[in-house]
Amino acid sequence: MQKLANDVNVGNTHYGKFFIVTANIDLSGIANWTPIGKGNSSSFTGTFGGDNHIISNLTITGESNNVGLFGYVSGGMIKNITLTDANISNNTSVGGIVGNSNSGTIENCAVSGNIEKVGGFVGDNKGTLNITDSLVASNVISASQSAVTFANGDGVCNIENSYYARTIDTVQGNELCVVSNLPEGITAEVLSGEEIVYNGTTYYKPSTTIKLTITNDFKYAPDTLTFSAGDNEFVKNDDGTYTLTLKESADISFDAQFKIGNLEYDAENGYFKIKTVADLQELAAYVNDGHKCMNLTFKLMNDIDVSSATDWVR
Image (cartoon, rainbow, N blue to C red; front, side, top):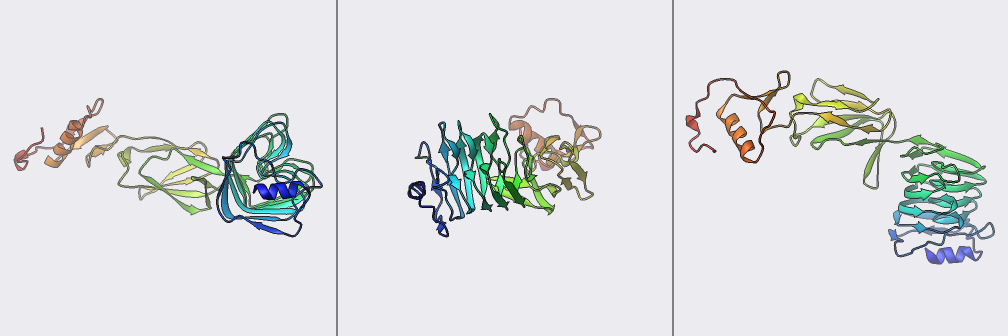
């Protein structure tokens, strides 16, 4: 990477040449990255293919302008690369991928991290820029210039099938939705629409419908469960599942009563039913495990013969 930067920065623009990344690259050992391309006469004009690898921990500090992984690109193509944990600050005309673009293409790329001042992908676009199949999940911070999801500048920016995961000053592309705080023991399955998994986070395209299913690992009594997800559409189905149709990111809140073993809970009247010796043993085990059952009610539903419990748990 540094050899490529040094070569381009002395005027070898590599027009018509193709570079491919063959492994993930960690830039944490470089305190202040020197971008690839430092001026109009030393712009990258070739093709940089990431082969779906990750470049992590890109850091650029100081007062230089037109910075990113690439400083200047003119007619070049950058594709199939993911930047994670980027940290670019104290500059102007900043982009995660390119600082200054005089036309070019960004295809199947993704950026996350903290990028101050201007664009998730391109800091200053002066020509025709094509962005396709890409994702910005960065904290793009507005300062002296308006922050833009993908590319700032006076040039033409054509955006196709590209998304962002955080709302900032000026929006380009489509916002993705995140479902957060989903309780343990509930699985999510896409019924319609599409999910994108990036850097360990699952994002959903707008209008995606998700089925939520309660599994045996769910720690609450299903009949007591109530969901809330803002303005998103939540429906409880006859089979006990739920469907969630996303209009926006959903911060799930829910209310439910903890399960106690296999005890049946009467949600309408607010008590656990004790009907068998096994139910009594479930309660004993729960209390003996350190639960004081404060504010919980248990109701004996019938007579119980405990003679079958030869070794009663005390």
